[in-house]
Image (tube, rainbow, N blue to C red; front, side, top):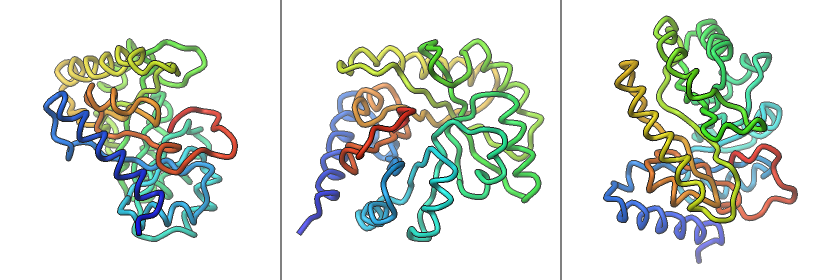
Length: 236
């Protein structure tokens, strides 16, 4: 008998496939990042038993407490705002960081990875909506960071991430996802860098994000059920 989690996952996978069909994409190009913030290790184990292997966290302290209690084969991605004084811990806990929002943070990640002999894949967070309440680089600032990044040997910029304004009508967020994809295409050519990943789309809008090119969709409540209290940063 299927668990409730497995049923939700299969519904999501069906919706992803249907979104891909609508725009002639390969569903294999879309990965699910199960956002486990505020859910305990038992819920993460449930996700692992259903076949998910990549888990997202927003807070360093929560990840430090939770990861040792979860299956060891899982891969963990950082999706929350990362302060520079937490970078040393982050590069040891996570195998990818989606939320790099400044040149100084990128430098700090590079230095921390250099110290332990690793290379960290990262996404640059772009504030495409221009909202003052959101983290992320302004679009005009991203090309300069991409060009400077060639001097960093211990980070690998693999893509871009964004969080659109929250709205009940998912069509209202389509322009923001589309704009990020268009910026990605422009910057790849301009800066001669491969930005293969687009981390965009959450529980309420992931189908639109897939239609607009998302490669990572960050799913929390649609997978795990409603949290006891709502997350503060709206990243999954």
